Image 1 (cartoon, rainbow, N blue to C red):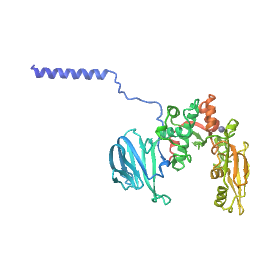
Image 2: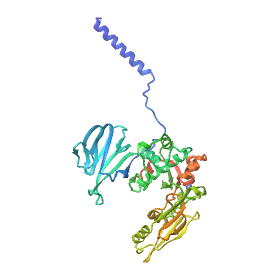
Image 3: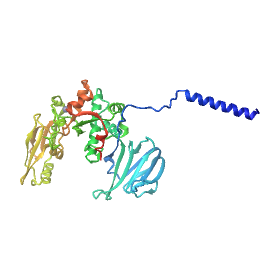
Image 4: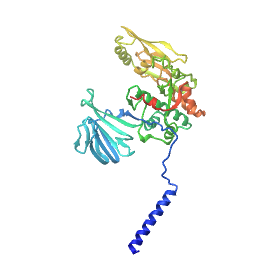
Length: 407
Ligand SMILES: [Zn+2]
């Protein structure tokens, strides 16, 4: 055997030995078989309302990203970019890259991997849909509509950070309860065919800049859990402080039908002197309300027609010189901007203004955030907090039959 032949033989023996070792050696590449069902984490969309009235928004993204034409069903890439910083702007006529403006009505901006994008001041996760909408009320007849497309769990994290102070001592269980309520509400709302907004019309959603480890823990430890009632997602409304008792959603005209988990609970501990508020409505605002409701040129009186056992106003009558109208008290609260319908006192002043006094903040339906914090500090678990505010609702993992309610 010559030298070349010997080398070939050695190489063949070496390869054979390596194959034998790799065959019998336990491999760390064995595929994992998980017995846990995969937790559903659907992609959802939320509108960034704080940015909608701006003419020009600066974008910063570290790493690769691309602009995609969403008007074309093929979704062609308009531009590949790398390390964007102050050279990309979102404007009322379309994205502007340096001097070049893309006159597109609907563009998607997507960063590679998990990179976040800064829009003016704050960083956001997900893919950004940039739409130029007709709007006669705005200065140029157009406005921007920005919507983030992101995984549900990332959205819930932003809501927990937006809706509660996550670094308050003893708040861990309250934060978890808030995470479940926020997750369920979002899916319920989307299932109704509504868009989610990042403000109090739905739930306050904060950027990545506000994420805390406490909020991350609250979302991770309740991952995929929602509240169900009668095989559907429960409309898990929540508010800041109930002022002595949460509202019965049906009696407060939130729903037409009785909803057991939203029937209201007594909570005397929320009626404290510290929570007392006073709110003055000027005569001009009262008159404006009378005109809007076609009651005449001024508001003669507000009378309470129904209260619940906790003293919460349920229905009120607005009386003007020409007519009267009976309304759910929460509609009047929203119109006159007093903080809650737990009104204890109403006083007319000589200048025609009306002073309201009462307890609590928000519509009063569902979970009371300040009450949840109190329960959390007295060692209640998040499941106990949810059972307190949403009695008879079931805490369950999000399953495909519930998820399918998404449009
Ligand atoms: Zn309360």
